[in-house]
Image: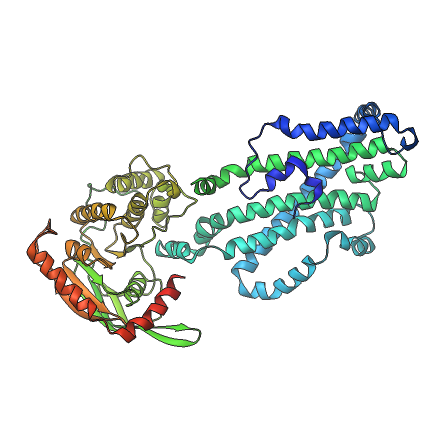
Amino acid sequence: MISPVLGGPAMAGSHPTFKMPRLSFLKGLVLPLLILVAWDLLARRGGGYGFAFVSLEGLGKALVDTIASGELPRHVATSLLRVAIGLSVGGTAGVLIGAAMALSPIVDKVLGPVYHAIRQVPTLGWIPLLGLWFGYGELPKDLIVIKAAMFPLVLNTYEGLKGVKAAHVDVGKVLTLNPLQLFFKVRLPSALPMILTGLQQALAFAWIACIGVEILFGSGSGIGAMIETGQVEGRMDVVLIGVIFVGLIAFALTRLFTRLAAPGLRWRDLKESR
Amino acid sequence: MSRTRPEFEPITAGRSGALAIRAVGKTHHIDGQPLEVLRDVSLDIGPGEFVSIVGASGCGKSTLLRLIVGLDNDYQGEIRLDDRRILSTSLDRGIVFQDHRLFPWMTVEENVAVALDRRPLGREAKKKLVAESLALVNLSGFEGAYPHQLSGGMAQRAAIARALINEPKVLLLDEPFGALDALTRLKLQTELQALRRRNQGTMLMVTHDVEEALYLADRVVIMQGGPGRIARIVPVPFPHPRDRGSAAFARLKDEILAELMREPELGSAQVTILSQDRRR
């Protein structure tokens, strides 16, 4: 489910228990450092492939340059903002649609087939169509990211609410809770672990879609656009910095999510540690 | 508005709790096939009385409790509590299930407090009620624990606190100690007996355990399955605290067990299928 963009230690956060590995951070750094050293050796020796391999020195210089010029921060900010929009708009819509489908058989029958049909089309497959409809500005890019964030949340919210135990709902009814109380006190908390898993997937999918759509559109700003421009201009150093930052940010976002989600799932962690 | 009350006195002062079950019948439909679970069940339970229903698995005794608590109003006949027809759930009826059914995402304290959600009480009054209620079942000190951190007996105590906090006129107990180990079961039976002296509400308990029924109940109702109906009602004449080891106790126990063994074979096979389906 998780793309290679989130490879490496970032994968740890995608484990259903939301637990990070207890291995020390240093062990996780061994492999990247080895790759960097090998990379640097190759770059220094293979003069003929100089356009494809950049020495670590060149990479460091490009990093300083892109930060100093404000280019890198600007691209990072654009991509992060796009993911934030996608997650808030798509996430909210996903939870609402998933909940409506789970709670109302009519909504389920009307929306279900359309949802599953659209779900079968890869997110990036919508780009040509959206490009035709909305041009190649920011709107179609945001729409793609919104869609990417929305779909896993529809599914997980639906499954989560469908999986609420009848025994627990009965207790709520015995305590004469009204439908609203029943939802917020029983159904929603019961479905929360599933919804948070969906949110974690949404985060990963939104980030992948964001970078992908920026590369494919190739215009405007964003880390994806920076990578694309770097490639066109033959700036391997810029491309590499882009790729490294895509990975680092994905890693940071996953960790941040794990931290934020943990308190809400305390009861479940206790359950599983028994 | 918060109400104060003397300790262990019911807030519904002068409450009654007379349960009248009249010609109740219930038919389930499984894959379109009708299955009669209860037929012509009639039973009167007086205020403050403790009645125990014993019977084989699937004789419809748990179904009867579901009807009384108000989770299902699709049945024939009628059930009245203090002359008012039962049509839905109400805080004047509490229930304890065999599985504690505490919400795993709430602490013990929150699990008990959720029973007060529909009561127009202030935060402090609710907090006080929850504390009293937990003290009553010896769970003080475990307010912040999650259900998964509790033993089976403790979880069931918390479930009892949740059911009793609104001081219901009738407390229904659906095999409340059935999933506990023998020692914990004996302990909780004694505690329930003590609670009853303080609580004074009507209690109706379904159980497999004839000894448990005889230890606690004023009357034991023997049900037979296929379809579920009342075979016999046995008054228990012994004063409390009862001696499980006495000869008279053992005699009555044997008598009830003999009655239960006379279960018709065909009927019980039929209802066993239902019971498995219902428990999923």
